[in-house]
Length: 458
Image (cartoon, rainbow, N blue to C red; front, side, top):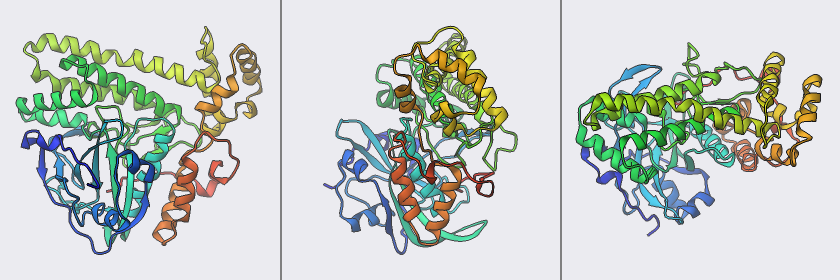
C-alpha cells in the first residue's frame, strides 16, 4: 500500500462528520512536495499519483473522506454551526514513531458545511500556508504541516477576479478544535460530546482521565503555544474558537503575519477591525478560548456547580503558566538562562525602547549587540557577563530569518505569474531559520514594500 490509512475519527458517531467526496479538477499538477514529511508518514507515491490523490481526483486505497462539523465564536460572536467548508479529511496514518496524523485536503470542493462557499482555494493562501506552517515547524512551534500543494488548472473567483486554483494537503495530529466541543455541547448531544472527549484524550493527552484533567492539558498547551508565538513576533490574526486546536497546534493560517517593526498592539488582519487579535492581546484571547472549552465540557459533569468552580480554577491557571513560559523564552532571547531579580525589568525596558524606535523585532533580537540602545546595552552586557555562553543561547532561539510579509506577497505574485522560483528560494531558506545568513531575505521591507494588511484565504 502507498498510504497505510487507519481512520479512527471516521469510526466515531456519524453526528461528528459528513462523508463527502472531493470534487474533481481539470488539470492537477504538483507545485510543491514535502518529501521528508512524506518519508516520516511512510507515503511512497509516483508523481502522477501525487497529483491525482492530492487534488482530489482519485482516492488512495483505504481513504474514508469526511468533513468535520464544529461551531465557534468568531470575533466573539457565536456561530452555532461551522465545519469544514472547504476541507476534506482523507484519513489518518501512523508515522514511523507510531504517532497518528490526519491527512486533509484544503480546497477540494464543497461540503455540507460550505455555507454558500465554493469549497475551493486559490494559489496565494495555499502557498502562504505551505511556507508559513513549514517555517513554524522549523522554528520549533507546534503546528500543522504541509505535505503538498497541487495546482488544479481551474480558476477560482474571488473579489480580485479569477485566480489560479490550488489544493493544500495539510497534516496534523488531529483537526479537533475548541469549536468541535462547543458544537456538541450547544446541540445537547452529550453522548457525542463524551465520545469526542474520550477520543481526543486518547489521541493528545493519554494521561487525562477526566474533563478537568483534559482541560488542564489544553490550558497548558495553549499558554505555552502563545508564549512561543509572541517570542517570534507572530500574530495569528483570527483566534476564533474554531481555530483553537485542543492539542496546542497552530492551525488555520489565514490573515497571519510576522511583525516587522515592533508594536505591542500590532494588527495585520484585514477583518480584525477592533484589534481583538492584536499581537499583545493573544494571551488573553487564548485564555478566553480555554474558558469556552470549559463551558462546553460542563454537560459531562454530574455536579455542574462544583464543576464550574473547578474548571474556573483550571482556566485561571492559564496566566501563571503563560507568564512562566514567556519569561523563560524571552529571557533566553537576551541570553539569560539563570534568572535573577531585575531580569524582567531589563527585558521590559528593551521592549519599551524597541516600541519607541519601531525597531525590527526579529533583527533586533538576533543582533542585540548592534541594537541602537547604548544605555540599555551597557546594563545588558554587564548582566550577561555572568551567564554561561549567552551568545550560543541567543543564536539558538532568535531566528535570522522569518517569513516576512512582503516576501510572502512577492512569492505569491511570482507564482500567479507562473514563476515558482521565489517560493523555492524562500521555503528553502526558512528550513534553517537559525543559521547565520546575510542576504535580502533577512532585511526588513523598504517603505514601499511594507504590507499593511493580510487577508483570509476565503
